[in-house]
Image 1: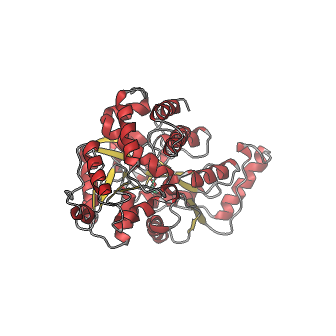
Image 2 (image 1 turned 120 degrees about the vertical axis):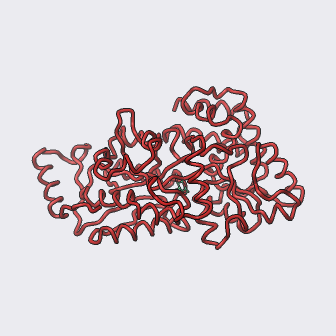
Image 3 (image 1 turned 90 degrees about the horizontal axis):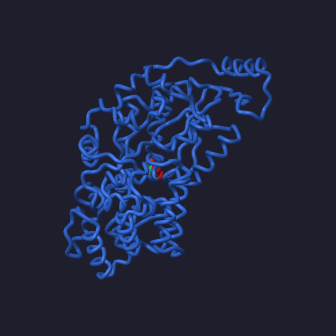
Length: 430
Ligand code: GAL
């Protein structure tokens, strides 16, 4: 599949002509004036700007340059794991000052609401027809991508699983514990954390900075509420005052007491590294962590395990990295070419093999992927699917930011469980 491209000069002239015809001046959305480029390129914003995260993006760029020689890929991203506030705030200011990247990654689902409302991104429904994507992606994903009026504003590059426990079996074995890392509930898990702590391991459960702490809360809520009541927290059908929430917050407090004291200074991949090195036995993180284990040459099933987070077997906590096309850009055809690569079979295979996620397309042979990824492909097909809150699938950015503040305050010791629960309840009004 190839995309026909306009020349940059023609695009620039068209933009200038349209400005002359409309007589607009700078300062309103209608008056946006894209900067003129000397050659064809696509500027791509992601938060996969360094470390293991960057390897998948580099591979995708390589496929792009093979599929579309003549268009230059420009890495226009910024580090900020999980799309944390560092990278999201930077992106937001670029959108507000009308200096958008041509395409940017966001999470499929509620996170896109504000970008759509503010008209920062374009309706890509016609691309779905042109590239045959409604048939290539599973129906459930198409529904999660579609707005109430049936439009789709992004193209997913992958599907990640958030509810995973990463395990160092040697640490468990040395301490006389069962090594699979499979726990039916949080109480059993906490009992093993206590055993490890008693044995002198300072942080049996590693965790990173704020968003990984929110991520840990998400899997704790999922374990104690189950998939239906967990999803109800975001749709409004489960009350935040529910006693199961109180239980989950108690478990969360307990889990946090087994984590590393320097957590606020660690990125997620440094927390993964603590498990890889055997300083911790466990870490709860999405399957982008696979890239960290791969890079260190670790073998799944021997050096580490990746199993459903305690109490969440049978549920797939879903998120998808999904590329959007900014409004008011100079060369939409170059952006379209990028989205074509993202959605292509080759793009999805090569990118996901490195990224740790599974392809969003269903017409790709599972044998191309690692042993862990095969388990994710099976689970995505069979399990109950819920939306990740930390990674933009379940709630809009404003609500996540209130939840994040509540988590920060609780983990700093400024609030107790009752205040924490009330603050989470208030997030629904954001
Ligand atoms: C998630 C994102 C993943 C990965 C991770 C860590 O939000 O969807 O692709 O980048 O954050 O940064």
